[in-house]
Image 1: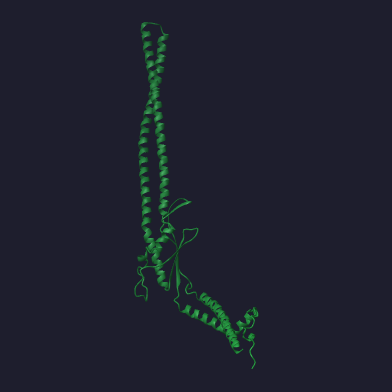
Image 2: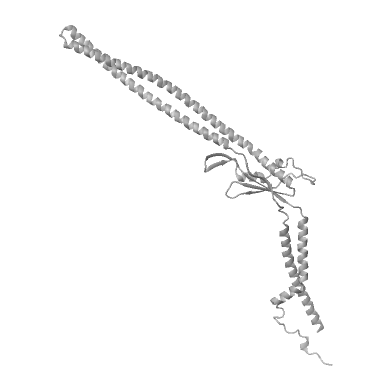
Length: 353
């Protein structure tokens, strides 16, 4: 009997390149398990298609809003009834849930929902607000979105009325101010009329004084040029005193005349100032009336509109994703099965030897 050599019990030397698989080996493995890969790919895509088609279809109802303008004093500074951020908060917090769900009946639902979830997006570089609602029933979604718009209009209608009443109060105040200025002008004009009469009377008085003084001077000169006697001298002295009195009266009258004319000029300036105030007040009234007419409630830039196609489920995306996932899994499975088969074959060969 031949004794075994000790080297027969030693494992064969390890070849580091034995487990290497080149590109052709990979292709051969894929080709070998091609039916497994195809079947797995088909099953995954078919399952994804069946599941997607059996899921409830979801549509989106979209509307675009904008806060209404309350006042525009200049093009760069517009005052709005509310900020887009506040309106977004009102919608998202469910402050209008009662109004939104009013008259809405959800079919095949035991307990009617008490809240509605909206997706609110603020459009960049504008005051527009995009509101989206997802629903499996387009008719109910349209009614909910319509109720939302009506609820917002009702909510901000009070603010619109408040701002309009505020403008009306400002208009009344300015009209009262105009009435006061008109009263001031009427009173001032009456004073000017009185001054005009006084000035006319003083003008006549000054003319009479001047005429009287000229007459007295001529008569005095006539007495002085005649033969001198006691009677003529006394008369000349009396004429001279009267002339001096007329000169003093003339000076006093002229001073009064200048004073009255100065008062008239001051009153005329007062009338002109009142007229300017009235013009400014009338311009302010026109501006406020324009603002009052321009006060806006929430603006519905785009009424509720349903999407043309369902947004969920995304059948094409689901089938494609399932196909890619199934392909990767079956390829991994084919390599795993190939590895297991080789490992078993190696164990069988080792046992046989």
